[in-house]
Length: 489
Image (tube, rainbow, N blue to C red; front, side, top):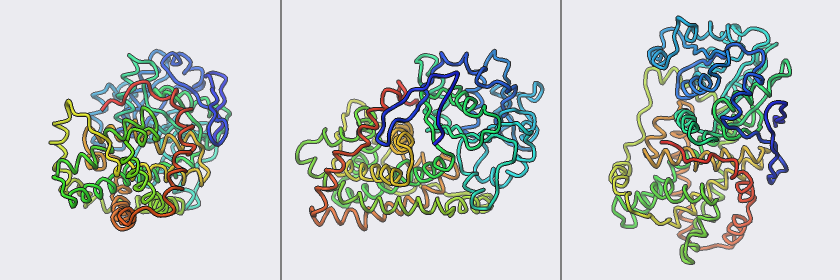
C-alpha cells in the first residue's frame, strides 16, 4: 500500500480492522498549498474529455486559479469533444487545448483519462511523447493490468501515480461545485504511487486529489486499485445490482405483485431505503429497522445468498487477476466500433420505473426484508473477498460500501439501474452486461431456492458473522471523513 506521508498536507491515522491507516483530509482551505505540493509543475495536461476528463480538468483549473499552473486539455485528432472543451474555456490559442500527444509532451503532470481500450491501443505513442522527469497520472490501473499481462512497462525516468475518484465524473464535478458552499463536499479518492522517480510523487498525487475536491484520500497500490475497481463494477457497484433487482422483480411478479409493487420491493428498495440506511447508519441498521418477522426473513435471505455470491465474486476476481477481463475489454473495441452495445433497459421491469418515481412524494417506503437480506449478502461477500485477497480496509470500505451507497445507488435512484449501466464507461458497461446475468442466474437457481427450502444449520452462523462483521467498525471509523453533503444527481 502507498504510505501517505506529507510535508505539506495534514495526515491523519484511522484505526481500521487491518490496523491503523493514514488518510489525508481535503478541503478548499488547502487549495493555497497546492502549488508547493506541485513544485516543478508548470503545466498539467489532462488527456481526454469523457466524464472524468471534463470533471478533472475543470476542477483542477478552478482549484489552481491564480497559481500560475496551467491546465491544458489534450484530445486526439478529429475528436468530437473539441467544441465541448472550447465551450468550457479551453482554447487552442492560449495553449490550453491541443493535440493529445503535443499536450502530453509539453506537460509536467500528464493525467491520462482516455478510455481504457484507447489507452491500451495507444500507450506506446503516449510513452514516447513523455519527457524524462514527467509524472504520468492515471485514474484507473487498467493499463498496469495490460502491461503485466503483456510483459510491458512504463517508460524509464517517469514517475507513475494514480488518483482514483470513487464516483462518476459527473459527480466529481457536481460535488466539487457544492464544495463552494460546504467545505469538504466532494468524492473520496484513492492514491497509488507506482513509481517515484524524483521523490515528489506522493506530494503531487495528494495535490491532484485535494485539487479535485476529495474529502479524504487513502492509499492503495495500482495493482490493488484496478483489481478492486474492475471487480466492484462487475459486482456490487453495477453488475450484481442489475442482476439482483431483475431476479427480485421476477420473483415478486410470480408471487402475484403488480409491476409497480414488484419494482418498489426490488429496485426501488435497494436504491432507496436500503441504500439511505446504510449510508446514514451502516449495514447493521438495515436489519435493526425490521420487526421480528422481518428480521427472520432478512436472516434467511442473507444466509441463502451469501455463499453463492461469494463464489461468483471470487470467480470475477480470478478473471480480473488473470487478465481475462482486461483482454475482453480490449478485444471488444473493434467490434463495438461497428456494432454498438444495445441498451439493457428493454426488460419489462424498467417500464414500471417512471411511474414509481413519480409517486415517491410523501411515501415512506418500508424496507423489504427479503431484498435487504439478499443485497447485504452480496455487499458483505465482496467485502470479505477483498479482505481475503489482501486489500487495505480503507479501499475495501470505499469500493464496496461508500461508493455504492453514496455515489452510484443514489444516481440509480434518480435515473434507474438500467440507465446507469447504459451510461457508464465502456469497461464498466461490458462488465455489468457480462456478469449481471450471472448474478441473476445465481439468485434464481441457487440462492432463492435455498431460501424456499427453509432454514438450514448454516443460517445462524452466517447471521452471527454479519452481526459481528468488522465492516461495521470500519465504517464507523471512516464516517467522520465522508462527504458532508449528499451526492448531487
